[in-house]
Amino acid sequence: MLENIFSSLGLAPEEAKIYAVLLETGPIHAGALAKKIGVPRSSLYGFLRRLQDHNLVVEGQKAGIKTFSAETPEKINLLFRQRQEALAKSQNDFKALLPDLAQKKSGRLVTPKVQLFEGAEGLKNALKDMLLYYDMETLALWPIQSMIDILSPDFFRYLNKERIKNNLYTRAIWPETKSVSISEHPYLGTGEEFKRNIRTAPTGMDFSMGYWIYGNRAVFISSRKESFGFIIESEELIEMLKSQFEIVWQLSKPLKASPQDSAAFLKELEQYK
Image (cartoon, rainbow, N blue to C red; front, side):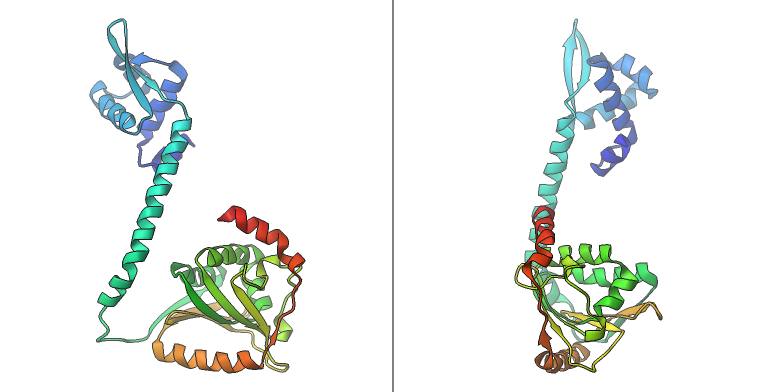
């Protein structure tokens, strides 16, 4: 367990072992530590230096002999916080840079791009592609009951938490025959807190395959019967789908939902952020 934790911080298994031994022994000189760990003394000093650089080991003196001891385990948690802060800063820097990078992308050879996916796990990965985007409106013609059947409620709970965190506002149209109860699925709530507006398609409009538009992409997901999906990137196709969506949106009725139905999920959402 400790080795996995240290690995996530960029530290070697030997360094995890050294730290664990130092916690048990207290201050100890390099020779005795090398024997306990079973590594050459020359290699040990390299590991100790890295642990000192991470403020996990301190050097001292006892009777004129250099000793080493472990810092408190709370220092490991501090390292995680520092890494999270560094990653958050890098992510914000990347978001600021992203428009410039997108402009540099050559548009001389614009061709539609298609990725195919099969099976429940493949379809989940297809939908997760949307989570690479931020701060935009998305449109979904979505047979929600069919999608839950194939991808599971737990997945949609996760997807909606991430979608809201990424500020992806969604307008969704559900067919009457494949709608679900918000009280039974509170993560599908509607309103500003959910960054989502849901309408019910006109009577007689039924569909088992759905699509979700984001940017110049759309992900299409089939029902469990066929269990396949694909992502397509095409400006012309997206423009056509958006035009059709707006027509159906105007003919659709707002979905009625009680705020109490989704109150518990909103509390989850506060902790998730």
